[in-house]
Structures are given as C-alpha cells and as structure tokens.
Length: 65
Image (cartoon, rainbow, N blue to C red; front, side, top):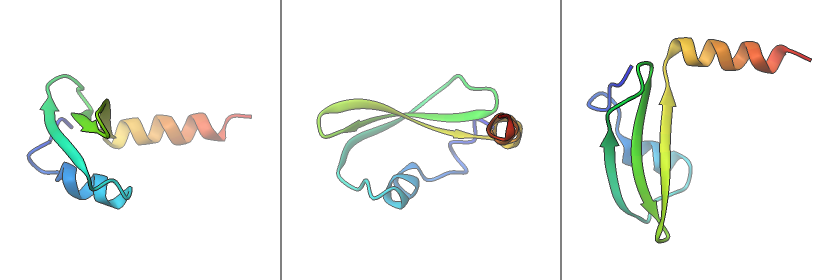
C-alpha cells in the first residue's frame, strides 16, 4: 500500500477526533501499510493504515476463537 500520497493523514486523525497534532510525517516502510509519525499532546505515535491483505488477516484473526 504505502500510498501516503493517496491518503490524508490529517483527515484520518480527525475521524478519530484527533485534531490537535503538532506534527505528521510519513514513514517509509510497510509494504502493505501506510505509516505516519504523529506528535500528539507532546507524545510520539504511529498512525498505521493497512491495505487489503492486512485487513483480511486482521478479520481472519478476529474470527478465531
């Protein structure tokens, strides 16, 4: 995935009610995941948005008892 240029990190964070970030920087790395380094309330966080295969694995994992 790594399509940070296709996704708006600020809009994704706003959907999570996080609007007062002081920095958002894309990180190279995830083959099927877009990753940003986010500074929020003075603390560092990672915003990760998974692609189709990541979502399928997550849903499959949730279905396991």
